[in-house]
Image (tube, rainbow, N blue to C red; front, side, top):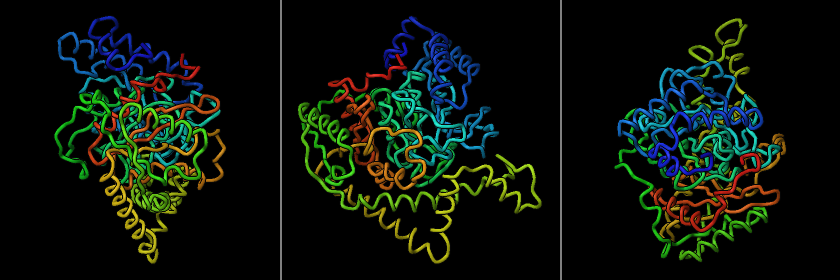
Length: 485
């Protein structure tokens, strides 16, 4: 059952081959065994999970089950969960129990899923390696000395190591796709506004978007279908008809045009990544798709634009964590200003402080026009590049990350090198487009390589279908770490 797809799990539950309580216990026991090494979970809610599983079994017995009823899942610890610790991977919120559920959590509860617990992440979703967590780094199950990627690293590890069939994540600049690539699983970031941000603790509000992580595109389609929907409490939530993203997965690829941006295939990509991506593209051509050369001329400006806009929004969003209403408060202080200063100094980690300072600087008088306003202009140019590219192709393909997972500590002292690891992913968030990462090969030491597919707005079904067709023809998504046998 640990290696079964969501459809297989649902069939087994329907046939009474296993109950949700038994299935949930299986995953909880696996978490208990593997988490001391992999550190994928910050919080495990055994009692709550078993209670929810029992309710799911009763719901199924009454003939009221849906596709996800009784299926265990894990939530990234950025989503508020009523009555359960929601820490955002930070000391600042290490004592915060949320009084309400995020919209995503509510939707998945209504779908009958069983929450196993909350997964590890870079503090306030700021990072690309999961090394910035107050609880220590999650570890890549393919090689525990390597990072799993971030910020949704714990969710990717949980799925890769078969500690959970599926998991939620969030993607601000690649934080679903990059850990999916590093851990050999599938992760999708939908069009901005299709998943509500209510109850999802904000990093950069114009970039953050909830996403789905699973072993396959089919699993991600089922999870994402249950996560999307209009929410009046989120001013950026889009009111659109609901999509059943799993219905078109078997559409043949004949006639699909895959755009290959020359900017994604230049210097900086590791040879082993290039080899795997080119092999995947060759498989797509064999399946009936065609490839066309395109250009995204402003893609090279995505990193500087992102690292102005995101910290600027973070400096505003994180101002609420002041030690007054909730979160960490310094034990000793002289006055209110001193309490603010000490609480924030003690509660935030180094990377969060770095981004708050950078964001405050670019928003300050005299620098707003020079930095923040210019970055927003670049953002528009990047979005226009994508619009022109989609006149010539249906999806855009390239590597998810320039390298495979690197060793823990390898880039800790060089934040700029860490930021450059997002070079293929951040432009998607700046434009608000959907994108998916799927396993496409392996490099030295069996470390996975991810292929990224980018779609036009609201084309999640096409992306998932294209990914599913490749996964039907290959087995990279079925391979698992040695420790996950």
